Length: 310
Ligand SMILES: Nc1nc2c(ncn2[C@@H]2O[C@H](COP(=O)(O)OP(=O)(O)OP(=O)(O)O)[C@@H](O)[C@H]2O)c(=O)[nH]1
Ligand SMILES: [Mg+2]
Image (cartoon, rainbow, N blue to C red; front, side, top):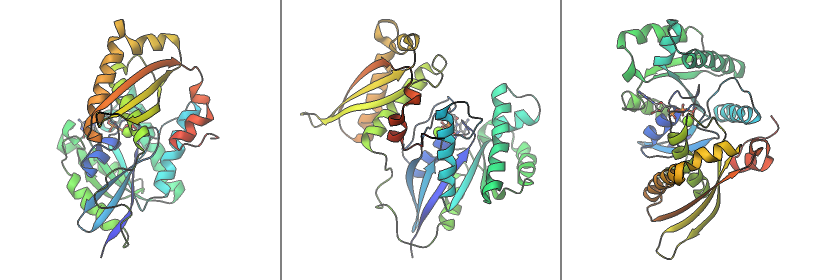
């Protein structure tokens, strides 16, 4: 008897959702950075547990939106949750504790607000979730009980797990639980497939990850990557051309860096990662372009599977 279904991981930006999905899948299927609002669209990864197949759905963070892209991301997150058999609400325990103690940074207070938004959204949708307190490697164990009780009292959850997506603690228990929650039925993906992102899009995501890792402070959510060419190379590898869209000339200068050094770093880091993921040599060519209104262009949303009219 096999089982298969979808488990969506939702939560505030930066809670560790993508880290958890990669951990559950056992390989890198979705990008991770220290910057909030990294994930922009639904990314699926496939985990096997015994005879169960869990299709994990990584979602963009849920937060107070300001622009069209924000709204589209949040819409995608809730759609991912609605369509899933199981929902994991991932909460950054460190940020939540700091906010509750009134000592948090602004980002912690915002994260706590976003947690309330998720709770309200779950109630409105008439769904309950698994509460997963994350980043427990960063907090005192004895502070977690109180935190889980306070959250549990909202009525939005039917169980709680305490985990560290980064070091893996508690993740196996969560995985077994998700496996048991999957409905009986045939597997949805071949057993050996772990990701389903088209390679062009995956390549664009990897470059965006390196870009964020390198210039996360100077570049506030203003970049987008498009793979414009993806072709077999005569050496058995692949030749990839990408455009890096930014909104202003000043941002272009930042991404390129002095003497091209920043762009070179980004390109080398992306190439190395991609070569490993694709299992063949990668020749990567990046060009930075100013495209002021890329975040208001319908085609970009369509390519990412996002709704434009939100
Ligand atoms: N210490 C610690 N850091 C973690 C843990 N899980 C994730 N992180 C870090 O938290 C940051 C955000 O991780 P992501 O997985 O990108 O978070 P996310 O929820 O997907 O964020 P968005 O896509 O922006 O919504 C990264 O720097 C991770 O390395 C954890 O269990 N412990
Ligand atoms: Mg993410």
